[in-house]
Amino acid sequence: MHYELDENYFRGYEWWLMKEAKKRNPNITLLGLPWSFPGWLGKGFNWPYVNLQLTAYYVVTWIVGAKHYHDLDIDYIGIWNERAFDINYIKVLRRMLNYQGLQQVKIIASDNLWEPISASMLLDSELLKVIDVIGAHYPGTHTVKDARLTGKKLWSSEDFSTLNSDVGAGCWGRILNQNYINGYMTATIAWNLVASYYEQLPYGRCGLMTAQEPWSGHYVVEAPVWIAAHTTQFTQPGWYYLKTVGHLEKGGSYVALTDGLGNLTIIIETMSHKHSMCIRPLLPYFNVSQQFATFILKGSFSKIPELQVWYTKLGKPSERFLFKQLDSLWLLDSGGRFTLDLQEDGLLTLTTLSTGSKGSDPLPPRSQPFPRVYKDDFNVDYPFFSEAPNFADQTGVFEYFMNIEDPGEHRFTLRQVLNQRPITWAADAFNTISIIGDYKWSNLTVKCDVYIETPEKGGVFIAGRVNKGGILIRSARGVFFWIFANGIYRVTGDLAGWIIYTSGHADVTAKKWYTLTLTINGGFSSGTLNGKPLWKNVSVNFPKNGWAAIGTHSFEFAQFDNFRVEAIH
Image (cartoon, rainbow, N blue to C red; front, side, top):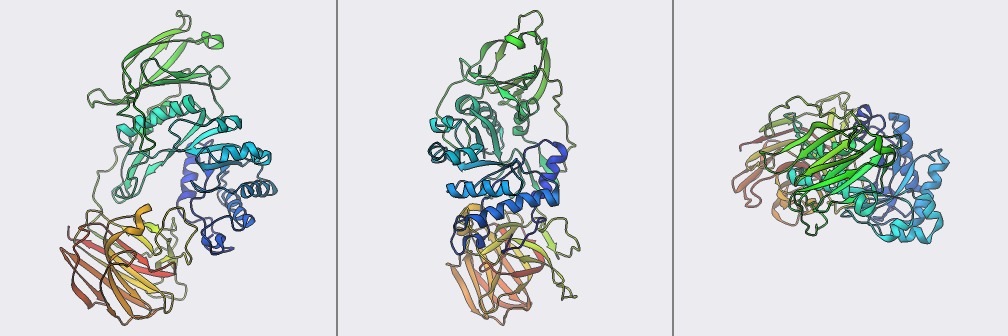
């Protein structure tokens, strides 16, 4: 809902992603969690709790729309990612969900730290009743006494966030076990699923797998995917952890789960300190060495005749393998007793389930750099996604747009559609910006048709060598070529517009199309307006490389067409 009473359930890629996930596993659990909120909810304040009913209405319509337009059942809904919660808002949200017949949608809070949410719940019986799960982010496998006292399910509702190398895989393997052993957390959610964004953005390659080259189709199924498989292929939501789990004598840990119907899955990890550090929090030192561990199956498990065995070994390339099925373990004559030789940096699953599968994926296309010459005229009659490919919006939202009145060459454009600053989660820029291309680009020409929609105050830019994005976007440097509806042009060395290289008068007004060209070569840059030089040989020494970009001066409607970039190298 970009504006009040504006409802659109076909924006972005998330609907598609959820439906694709459901195709692969119809029982997958879906969670919703707001990071930012649309600005109109704040009534001028950067705060979502100004009107509790309005914010709850906004969230509930999203859940209703998911069902109505996409047949998606949202199972859990959060409050506000890693920011303040409001006790009354949580209660209002529960009441509104119930009023809409969504009693089955559970509330998770507060997706930040264990406190103060746990203490608040212990002091407020209604709050305790309406929250189903306490979710903490990056708990470092530990919880707090108050959280346990609530008797609620405890989740690590955001974790991992680590480069998906072997160390990242080790981090993931260790916390998947120890979040339960040390902190009684029965779910661990990795941020993020697939690293499908430019690698030089903050948290590059912090996905369980990597697919950051849509132009080539190249992808890598990284080690954390197979680490996850050790748990996820042999358990389901609804299985129970056994109480007899814990740490191994010489480092490492083991958990065991059952479906209550006789099936058993045991997961053992021996991740070393240096090969399992997550990006956060700091991991205190511990030692792991090779050891023999004896397990005894008792009670109803003593009659299990055989366990399937799956093994991963991280570390030296010569010894390394991922999710390999070994010979099964026969237990008929052993009275349920078996001894394992556990090597450092290993992960072992022993299970009664015989449904495990390594699976295979076809060899992906070769990795290729972003094309040196790239153009997009945005002429798409019925776009599958609302956003144009390869553009990565950092602040603002750039969507395909059709000018119904314009039968000419600007009928189909890319439009910046947010006209007010959102209630932000991070320190978004005050300008809108979408980046594209190869971060290594240095010398390039960017050309684009632009259309300012806001008289007097409106402004747009094209840029090159943009060196930052994500949570750091406000301090992005680069070469930015701006034109304004009041007839001014400006060339700046940063997005915020503090570093002015040159400025002057330009024959520009709102509601007219102009063609801007920005050329950057070595330490110099120049720009043209409708093919005529506007400024040239302006000295630009920093940064040396970065992405191309388009954007607007503030949160305002503006359009872009016939985008073209050519990188010399």
